[in-house]
Image 1 (cartoon, rainbow, N blue to C red):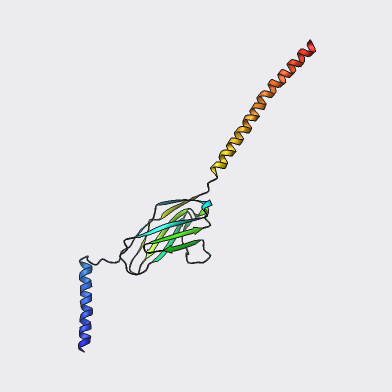
Image 2: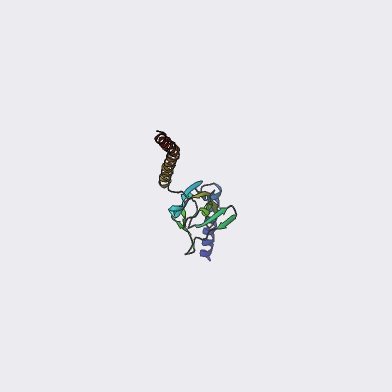
Length: 179
């Protein structure tokens, strides 16, 4: 009977101590803040892209769960990063998590929001705007422009010189006949 009273006192004492530490601000509640880059640009030829999400100063014990949401013009969806055949996969470390998108497409452009959940707290980032573009090889375009300019120059040369040559030929022939 004496032991149960002592353990009850210890439990009450821990509760009082926790309350004192919590309300004085010495022991802070579980808080989490998430940071994401505002914009990330990618090219389709990269085939994949990795979007970062950083957990700032977590004061929560234990492990966290990661959620990724994609906002498109047509609406939003929660991305299933656990599926084996999914184009989307998530990886996490101590205070970071990433979303990897494989088979990158122009249609993947949108806002990607990272969500972090601990047992007692959750937070989302402001979202990363992913801009996916298809860039054509600029070197190839430059060669094509030079080639077209050369062809156009030759065509203009022929068109200009053809009437001059015809006129000269007819004039020379008329002199020969008239002489």
